[in-house]
Length: 397
View 1: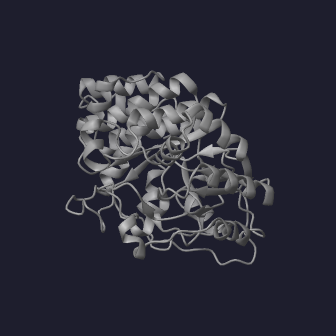
View 2 (view 1 turned 180 degrees about the vertical axis):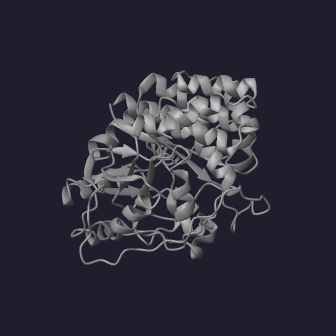
View 3 (view 1 turned 45 degrees about the horizontal axis):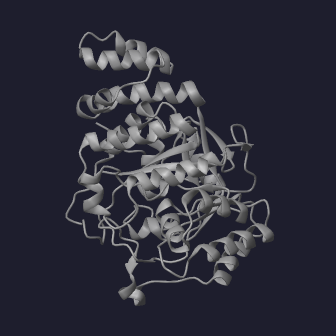
Protein backbone atom coordinates (compact mmCIF):
# COMPACT_ATOMS: atom_id res chain seq x y z
CA UNK A 1 0.00 0.00 0.00
CA UNK A 2 1.12 3.53 -0.62
CA UNK A 3 1.09 6.20 2.10
CA UNK A 4 -2.41 7.47 1.28
CA UNK A 5 -3.88 3.97 1.30
CA UNK A 6 -2.30 3.33 4.69
CA UNK A 7 -3.86 6.50 6.04
CA UNK A 8 -7.30 5.58 4.69
CA UNK A 9 -7.06 2.13 6.25
CA UNK A 10 -6.23 3.80 9.55
CA UNK A 11 -9.28 6.04 9.26
CA UNK A 12 -11.49 3.00 8.69
CA UNK A 13 -10.28 1.27 11.86
CA UNK A 14 -13.25 1.19 14.28
CA UNK A 15 -10.84 0.92 17.23
CA UNK A 16 -9.36 4.37 16.56
CA UNK A 17 -10.48 6.96 19.12
CA UNK A 18 -12.60 9.81 17.80
CA UNK A 19 -10.05 12.53 18.61
CA UNK A 20 -7.28 10.64 16.84
CA UNK A 21 -9.56 9.93 13.89
CA UNK A 22 -10.35 13.64 13.64
CA UNK A 23 -6.64 14.49 13.52
CA UNK A 24 -6.00 11.82 10.88
CA UNK A 25 -8.83 13.21 8.75
CA UNK A 26 -7.30 16.68 8.99
CA UNK A 27 -3.97 15.31 7.81
CA UNK A 28 -5.64 13.58 4.87
CA UNK A 29 -7.44 16.84 4.01
CA UNK A 30 -4.23 18.89 4.41
CA UNK A 31 -5.71 20.93 7.23
CA UNK A 32 -3.74 22.43 10.11
CA UNK A 33 -4.05 20.77 13.51
CA UNK A 34 -4.51 22.86 16.66
CA UNK A 35 -2.30 23.28 19.71
CA UNK A 36 -4.52 20.95 21.74
CA UNK A 37 -4.45 18.36 18.98
CA UNK A 38 -0.66 18.54 19.01
CA UNK A 39 -0.69 17.73 22.72
CA UNK A 40 -3.14 14.89 22.03
CA UNK A 41 -0.70 13.38 19.53
CA UNK A 42 2.03 13.31 22.18
CA UNK A 43 -0.26 11.95 24.89
CA UNK A 44 -2.23 9.37 22.91
CA UNK A 45 -0.59 8.83 19.52
CA UNK A 46 1.14 5.47 19.35
CA UNK A 47 4.19 5.12 17.13
CA UNK A 48 2.40 3.28 14.35
CA UNK A 49 -0.41 5.87 14.25
CA UNK A 50 1.76 9.01 14.11
CA UNK A 51 4.08 7.22 11.71
CA UNK A 52 1.31 6.69 9.17
CA UNK A 53 0.27 10.36 9.38
CA UNK A 54 3.82 11.69 9.17
CA UNK A 55 4.82 9.42 6.32
CA UNK A 56 1.76 10.50 4.34
CA UNK A 57 2.82 14.14 4.70
CA UNK A 58 6.43 13.32 3.92
CA UNK A 59 5.59 11.39 0.76
CA UNK A 60 2.99 13.93 -0.35
CA UNK A 61 5.69 16.63 -0.18
CA UNK A 62 8.83 14.74 -1.21
CA UNK A 63 7.93 11.25 -2.36
CA UNK A 64 10.84 8.95 -1.54
CA UNK A 65 13.43 11.71 -1.94
CA UNK A 66 15.85 11.98 0.98
CA UNK A 67 18.31 14.85 1.03
CA UNK A 68 21.89 15.22 2.23
CA UNK A 69 24.74 17.59 1.56
CA UNK A 70 28.52 17.67 1.62
CA UNK A 71 29.58 19.92 4.45
CA UNK A 72 32.19 20.45 7.11
CA UNK A 73 32.18 22.20 10.45
CA UNK A 74 34.33 24.84 12.06
CA UNK A 75 33.92 25.13 15.81
CA UNK A 76 35.84 28.28 16.81
CA UNK A 77 35.88 27.48 20.54
CA UNK A 78 34.25 25.33 23.18
CA UNK A 79 34.77 28.01 25.81
CA UNK A 80 31.65 30.00 26.61
CA UNK A 81 30.39 32.78 28.84
CA UNK A 82 27.10 30.91 29.25
CA UNK A 83 26.47 27.95 31.53
CA UNK A 84 23.77 25.80 29.92
CA UNK A 85 22.95 22.85 32.15
CA UNK A 86 22.48 20.36 29.29
CA UNK A 87 25.71 21.19 27.47
CA UNK A 88 28.49 18.60 27.41
CA UNK A 89 30.48 20.56 24.84
CA UNK A 90 31.31 23.94 26.34
CA UNK A 91 33.66 24.91 29.13
CA UNK A 92 33.53 28.09 31.20
CA UNK A 93 36.34 30.59 30.83
CA UNK A 94 37.77 29.49 34.19
CA UNK A 95 38.19 26.03 32.58
CA UNK A 96 40.32 27.40 29.75
CA UNK A 97 42.83 24.56 30.05
CA UNK A 98 40.11 22.12 28.89
CA UNK A 99 39.17 24.04 25.79
CA UNK A 100 40.37 25.37 22.47
CA UNK A 101 40.26 28.80 20.84
CA UNK A 102 41.02 28.90 17.12
CA UNK A 103 42.55 31.98 15.59
CA UNK A 104 41.18 33.32 12.35
CA UNK A 105 44.16 31.91 10.48
CA UNK A 106 43.53 28.48 11.99
CA UNK A 107 39.89 28.61 10.87
CA UNK A 108 40.90 29.63 7.38
CA UNK A 109 43.36 26.74 7.33
CA UNK A 110 40.42 24.40 8.03
CA UNK A 111 38.60 25.89 5.05
CA UNK A 112 41.66 25.47 2.83
CA UNK A 113 41.97 21.83 3.87
CA UNK A 114 38.84 21.19 1.77
CA UNK A 115 40.00 23.08 -1.33
CA UNK A 116 40.11 19.90 -3.42
CA UNK A 117 36.92 18.45 -1.94
CA UNK A 118 33.44 18.89 -3.51
CA UNK A 119 31.95 20.35 -0.32
CA UNK A 120 29.26 22.98 -0.69
CA UNK A 121 28.83 24.31 2.86
CA UNK A 122 30.86 25.38 5.87
CA UNK A 123 28.86 25.28 9.10
CA UNK A 124 30.32 27.57 11.80
CA UNK A 125 29.04 27.42 15.38
CA UNK A 126 30.63 27.22 18.80
CA UNK A 127 30.93 28.85 22.18
CA UNK A 128 30.52 32.55 22.97
CA UNK A 129 33.63 34.55 23.92
CA UNK A 130 34.32 38.32 23.89
CA UNK A 131 37.15 38.14 21.33
CA UNK A 132 34.86 36.53 18.76
CA UNK A 133 33.07 39.81 18.21
CA UNK A 134 31.29 41.40 15.28
CA UNK A 135 34.41 42.64 13.43
CA UNK A 136 36.02 39.22 13.86
CA UNK A 137 33.15 37.36 12.22
CA UNK A 138 32.72 39.99 9.51
CA UNK A 139 36.37 39.53 8.60
CA UNK A 140 36.13 35.72 8.80
CA UNK A 141 33.07 35.51 6.55
CA UNK A 142 34.60 37.89 4.04
CA UNK A 143 37.87 35.96 4.01
CA UNK A 144 36.09 32.65 3.40
CA UNK A 145 34.06 34.09 0.52
CA UNK A 146 37.17 35.70 -0.97
CA UNK A 147 39.05 32.40 -0.82
CA UNK A 148 36.22 30.21 -2.10
CA UNK A 149 33.26 32.25 -3.38
CA UNK A 150 31.01 29.24 -4.12
CA UNK A 151 31.27 27.85 -0.57
CA UNK A 152 28.04 28.57 1.32
CA UNK A 153 28.59 30.15 4.73
CA UNK A 154 26.05 28.92 7.28
CA UNK A 155 27.09 30.39 10.58
CA UNK A 156 26.28 31.27 14.16
CA UNK A 157 23.09 30.98 16.17
CA UNK A 158 21.00 33.80 17.65
CA UNK A 159 22.75 33.11 20.96
CA UNK A 160 26.02 34.23 19.37
CA UNK A 161 24.47 37.08 17.38
CA UNK A 162 22.60 38.45 20.40
CA UNK A 163 25.88 38.63 22.32
CA UNK A 164 27.99 40.20 19.57
CA UNK A 165 25.30 42.71 18.53
CA UNK A 166 24.86 43.81 22.14
CA UNK A 167 28.63 44.19 22.48
CA UNK A 168 28.77 46.17 19.22
CA UNK A 169 25.78 48.30 20.28
CA UNK A 170 23.79 47.61 17.11
CA UNK A 171 20.21 46.45 16.79
CA UNK A 172 19.29 43.09 15.32
CA UNK A 173 18.22 44.47 11.95
CA UNK A 174 21.48 46.37 11.48
CA UNK A 175 23.57 43.47 12.74
CA UNK A 176 22.02 40.92 10.43
CA UNK A 177 22.35 43.25 7.45
CA UNK A 178 26.05 43.75 8.17
CA UNK A 179 26.58 40.00 8.51
CA UNK A 180 24.88 39.41 5.18
CA UNK A 181 27.10 42.04 3.57
CA UNK A 182 30.16 40.29 5.02
CA UNK A 183 29.24 36.98 3.39
CA UNK A 184 26.80 35.20 5.70
CA UNK A 185 24.32 33.23 3.58
CA UNK A 186 22.17 31.29 6.04
CA UNK A 187 21.74 30.62 9.74
CA UNK A 188 21.67 27.27 11.54
CA UNK A 189 18.91 26.56 14.03
CA UNK A 190 20.83 26.07 17.27
CA UNK A 191 20.25 27.79 20.58
CA UNK A 192 16.47 27.39 20.51
CA UNK A 193 16.44 24.63 23.16
CA UNK A 194 12.91 24.92 24.64
CA UNK A 195 11.29 28.34 24.32
CA UNK A 196 8.94 28.34 27.31
CA UNK A 197 10.53 30.18 30.27
CA UNK A 198 9.45 27.48 32.72
CA UNK A 199 12.04 25.23 31.11
CA UNK A 200 14.42 27.70 29.49
CA UNK A 201 15.12 29.43 32.82
CA UNK A 202 16.14 26.09 34.31
CA UNK A 203 18.41 24.81 31.55
CA UNK A 204 19.73 27.94 29.78
CA UNK A 205 18.89 30.93 31.93
CA UNK A 206 21.69 33.30 30.96
CA UNK A 207 21.50 33.30 27.18
CA UNK A 208 19.07 34.98 24.80
CA UNK A 209 15.37 34.59 25.46
CA UNK A 210 12.92 32.84 23.17
CA UNK A 211 11.64 36.18 21.89
CA UNK A 212 15.16 37.35 21.14
CA UNK A 213 15.95 34.09 19.32
CA UNK A 214 12.82 34.47 17.21
CA UNK A 215 13.40 38.20 16.59
CA UNK A 216 16.90 37.58 15.19
CA UNK A 217 15.57 34.95 12.78
CA UNK A 218 12.75 37.28 11.79
CA UNK A 219 15.18 40.09 10.94
CA UNK A 220 17.23 37.64 8.89
CA UNK A 221 14.12 36.49 7.03
CA UNK A 222 13.18 40.11 6.31
CA UNK A 223 16.42 40.33 4.32
CA UNK A 224 15.11 37.53 2.09
CA UNK A 225 17.43 34.98 3.67
CA UNK A 226 16.83 31.45 4.99
CA UNK A 227 17.50 29.70 8.27
CA UNK A 228 16.81 26.51 10.20
CA UNK A 229 15.14 25.85 13.54
CA UNK A 230 15.71 23.29 16.29
CA UNK A 231 14.19 22.00 19.51
CA UNK A 232 16.06 20.22 22.30
CA UNK A 233 13.70 17.50 23.54
CA UNK A 234 13.68 14.60 25.95
CA UNK A 235 14.82 16.14 29.23
CA UNK A 236 12.67 17.98 31.83
CA UNK A 237 10.07 19.44 29.48
CA UNK A 238 6.46 18.30 29.26
CA UNK A 239 4.75 17.44 26.00
CA UNK A 240 2.90 20.75 25.92
CA UNK A 241 6.23 22.60 26.15
CA UNK A 242 7.24 20.91 22.89
CA UNK A 243 3.99 21.96 21.24
CA UNK A 244 4.37 25.50 22.57
CA UNK A 245 7.86 25.60 21.05
CA UNK A 246 6.68 24.40 17.66
CA UNK A 247 3.68 26.75 17.77
CA UNK A 248 5.96 29.76 18.10
CA UNK A 249 8.01 28.54 15.16
CA UNK A 250 4.87 27.90 13.12
CA UNK A 251 3.61 31.42 13.78
CA UNK A 252 6.90 33.02 12.73
CA UNK A 253 6.97 30.85 9.62
CA UNK A 254 3.46 32.04 8.77
CA UNK A 255 4.75 35.62 8.88
CA UNK A 256 8.05 35.21 7.04
CA UNK A 257 8.33 31.84 5.28
CA UNK A 258 12.05 31.98 5.98
CA UNK A 259 12.60 28.67 7.74
CA UNK A 260 13.75 25.76 5.61
CA UNK A 261 14.17 22.90 8.02
CA UNK A 262 13.17 21.82 11.52
CA UNK A 263 15.65 19.66 13.41
CA UNK A 264 14.61 17.94 16.65
CA UNK A 265 17.74 17.53 18.78
CA UNK A 266 17.84 14.63 21.21
CA UNK A 267 19.07 15.50 24.71
CA UNK A 268 22.16 13.48 25.59
CA UNK A 269 23.15 13.13 29.24
CA UNK A 270 26.88 12.45 29.05
CA UNK A 271 29.16 14.66 31.17
CA UNK A 272 26.80 17.54 31.83
CA UNK A 273 24.84 19.03 34.72
CA UNK A 274 21.72 17.06 33.76
CA UNK A 275 23.35 13.65 33.68
CA UNK A 276 20.75 12.41 36.18
CA UNK A 277 18.01 12.84 33.53
CA UNK A 278 17.35 9.71 31.50
CA UNK A 279 17.51 9.94 27.72
CA UNK A 280 14.48 9.35 25.53
CA UNK A 281 13.98 5.96 23.90
CA UNK A 282 14.23 5.30 20.16
CA UNK A 283 10.44 4.97 20.09
CA UNK A 284 10.03 8.41 21.64
CA UNK A 285 12.60 9.85 19.23
CA UNK A 286 10.63 8.51 16.26
CA UNK A 287 7.32 9.71 17.71
CA UNK A 288 8.81 13.16 18.14
CA UNK A 289 10.00 13.31 14.52
CA UNK A 290 6.58 12.21 13.34
CA UNK A 291 4.64 14.71 15.45
CA UNK A 292 6.95 17.52 14.36
CA UNK A 293 6.22 16.63 10.73
CA UNK A 294 2.48 16.69 11.43
CA UNK A 295 2.45 19.91 13.44
CA UNK A 296 4.82 22.05 11.38
CA UNK A 297 2.71 22.06 8.26
CA UNK A 298 4.44 25.18 6.90
CA UNK A 299 8.00 23.79 7.12
CA UNK A 300 9.29 22.14 3.96
CA UNK A 301 11.74 19.77 5.62
CA UNK A 302 12.29 17.74 8.80
CA UNK A 303 15.91 16.78 9.42
CA UNK A 304 17.52 14.09 11.57
CA UNK A 305 21.17 14.48 12.48
CA UNK A 306 22.36 10.94 11.87
CA UNK A 307 25.55 11.64 13.80
CA UNK A 308 23.57 12.39 16.96
CA UNK A 309 20.97 9.60 16.85
CA UNK A 310 22.98 6.88 15.03
CA UNK A 311 22.88 5.64 11.47
CA UNK A 312 20.23 3.02 12.23
CA UNK A 313 17.81 5.37 13.96
CA UNK A 314 18.30 7.86 11.13
CA UNK A 315 17.27 5.15 8.68
CA UNK A 316 14.16 4.41 10.71
CA UNK A 317 13.28 8.10 10.91
CA UNK A 318 12.84 8.21 7.14
CA UNK A 319 9.52 6.42 7.66
CA UNK A 320 8.45 8.87 10.37
CA UNK A 321 8.39 12.20 8.56
CA UNK A 322 12.11 12.86 8.10
CA UNK A 323 13.32 13.69 4.58
CA UNK A 324 16.83 14.99 5.34
CA UNK A 325 19.70 13.40 7.27
CA UNK A 326 22.21 16.28 7.08
CA UNK A 327 25.63 15.85 5.56
CA UNK A 328 28.81 13.92 5.23
CA UNK A 329 30.36 15.95 8.08
CA UNK A 330 34.00 16.23 8.97
CA UNK A 331 35.22 13.54 11.32
CA UNK A 332 36.68 16.16 13.66
CA UNK A 333 33.24 17.45 14.64
CA UNK A 334 33.24 17.58 18.43
CA UNK A 335 29.77 18.78 19.44
CA UNK A 336 28.11 15.43 18.77
CA UNK A 337 30.69 13.12 20.28
CA UNK A 338 31.25 15.22 23.42
CA UNK A 339 27.50 15.13 24.07
CA UNK A 340 27.48 11.34 24.07
CA UNK A 341 26.34 10.72 20.51
CA UNK A 342 26.41 7.11 19.41
CA UNK A 343 28.57 8.05 16.42
CA UNK A 344 31.87 8.93 18.08
CA UNK A 345 33.62 9.66 14.77
CA UNK A 346 30.83 11.32 12.82
CA UNK A 347 31.95 11.18 9.23
CA UNK A 348 30.51 9.29 6.28
CA UNK A 349 31.50 9.24 2.66
CA UNK A 350 29.00 10.18 0.01
CA UNK A 351 28.69 6.54 -0.97
CA UNK A 352 27.97 5.53 2.62
CA UNK A 353 25.20 8.12 2.90
CA UNK A 354 23.72 7.08 -0.42
CA UNK A 355 23.71 3.41 0.55
CA UNK A 356 22.28 4.19 3.98
CA UNK A 357 19.33 5.90 2.31
CA UNK A 358 18.85 3.28 -0.41
CA UNK A 359 18.94 0.45 2.10
CA UNK A 360 15.52 1.52 3.42
CA UNK A 361 13.98 2.05 0.00
CA UNK A 362 14.40 5.81 -0.22
CA UNK A 363 15.77 7.95 -3.04
CA UNK A 364 19.04 9.78 -2.19
CA UNK A 365 19.51 13.32 -3.45
CA UNK A 366 22.55 15.48 -2.79
CA UNK A 367 21.49 19.09 -2.25
CA UNK A 368 23.14 22.38 -1.53
CA UNK A 369 22.26 24.38 1.58
CA UNK A 370 19.19 25.91 -0.07
CA UNK A 371 17.91 22.55 -1.34
CA UNK A 372 18.90 22.95 -4.94
CA UNK A 373 19.62 19.50 -6.35
CA UNK A 374 23.28 18.82 -7.08
CA UNK A 375 23.21 15.09 -7.85
CA UNK A 376 20.35 12.59 -8.01
CA UNK A 377 21.72 9.24 -6.84
CA UNK A 378 18.65 7.11 -7.55
CA UNK A 379 20.37 5.18 -10.35
CA UNK A 380 23.95 6.21 -9.67
CA UNK A 381 26.65 3.54 -9.57
CA UNK A 382 29.87 4.02 -7.64
CA UNK A 383 32.88 2.61 -9.45
CA UNK A 384 35.79 0.88 -7.74
CA UNK A 385 34.47 1.29 -4.21
CA UNK A 386 33.43 -1.51 -1.88
CA UNK A 387 29.77 -1.33 -0.95
CA UNK A 388 29.46 -0.18 2.67
CA UNK A 389 27.75 -2.44 5.19
CA UNK A 390 25.45 -1.26 7.96
CA UNK A 391 24.18 -3.00 11.03
CA UNK A 392 20.85 -4.74 10.81
CA UNK A 393 18.08 -2.32 11.71
CA UNK A 394 16.58 -2.79 15.17
CA UNK A 395 13.05 -4.08 15.51
CA UNK A 396 10.63 -1.52 16.93
CA UNK A 397 7.99 -3.23 19.06
